[in-house]
Length: 414
Image (cartoon, rainbow, N blue to C red; front, top):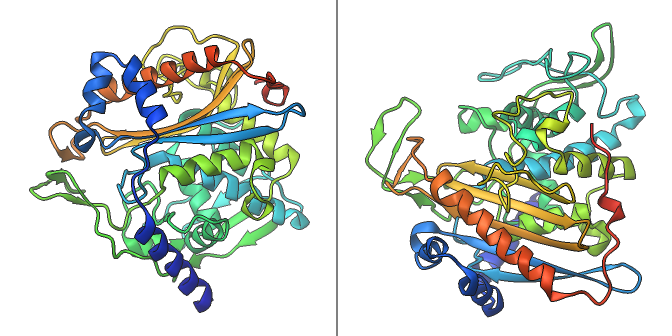
C-alpha cells in the first residue's frame, strides 16, 4: 500500500511539474469569431472568469467506430475550479461498479439500502419518499443525482464507497490529480474520513451488511488554493480573507471529460481505464444522464422549478424555450461558490450530429464567497448557451464523411 501511495504522489508531482495551459487556436478563433459582445467580454477577461473549455470533435469511420479529437481553450489542471456536483458523476459510476461486485450476496442497485449513523456528524436514511417503494436504493440515488443533482444522494454514494476506495480506484484508472475528500454537508475533515455502516435487504432479512470505515489515505495538499477576497464561514460571519480550497474536492476538467467519454464510449479508452460496468449499467446511466426531470415518475419533480433545461447548461439552461425532441444532452453539471461547470455529450438524432463539450466559468463579481450572490443567470448560463450554440452550428455545417449511427443513444424514458 505504501508503494501505491508513493507511486501516486510521484505521478501527481510529475503532472504538476509538466502541466501548462493548453489553448488550440482553432477553438479560440471559432468562439471569438462568432461571439456576441457579452461573450467577448468574458473571453477578454480570463483572470476574472477563470473559464476553461474542451470541445471534443467526434468522427465516425465506415464501421461507425468513433474517433475523438479534443480542442482546448485555457485548460490547465493547476488553475483550480470548484467542481461542485460534477464529482457526483464518477461516484455514480463507481457505485454501480461496486454493486456489481457484490452480486454474490443477492443484491443489486434496486435492493433496499439503509444507512445507519456510526460516527459524529453522520445521519441515517431509512425511507425515500421519491421512490415507488418508499425505501432507499442505490438506483434511486443515481436517478436523483442525474435528474436534479441531488446532494443527499451524493452523500449516500460517498458513504457506500468510502473515501479511500473512491480515490484509490480513480487513481488506478489513471486520474492521479482527482481528489474527492468530502460530502456535501457541514462536516470536519475527520468526519468526512469516516463513513457509515449500511444494510441491504429487508429489516427482517439483511442480505449484506457493510461495516463503518475510516480513511487513512494521504492526500497531497501541498498546492495552496485561495479564491476570492472574503467569505462567509459556517457561522455566517464574514471573514476578510480569501477562501481556502486546498482540501476541497478537485476534479480537473480534462479528467472529467475523459471519464464521461469512458462511459459513453467505453471502447474508445484502454480497458485498464474503463469502469467495470455491464450493459444494463450503461443503459441505466444513459437514460438518467439524458432524461428530463418532467419525464420521471419516480422521482417525481415539479417542472416549474425543475424545468427541462435545469441541469442542461450547454445550449439549454439559459432559456426556458422548448428543447427540440431530436436533441439530447448526456451530461453532469455542477454549480457552487460562483463556479459553474458542465460535462456534456450532445446528440442530434435528426441531423446526425454529435460532439462533447466540457467547460467551467467563475462568476463572482463582488469577490465574496458563500454570500449566494453569484452571476449564474446573468453570465454563466448565457455563456454555456452561446458556447454550445456556436459549436453546434459549426457541427451542423462541417459535414461528416460517414454520418454517425446514434441508435445506441435513442432511449425510452419513464
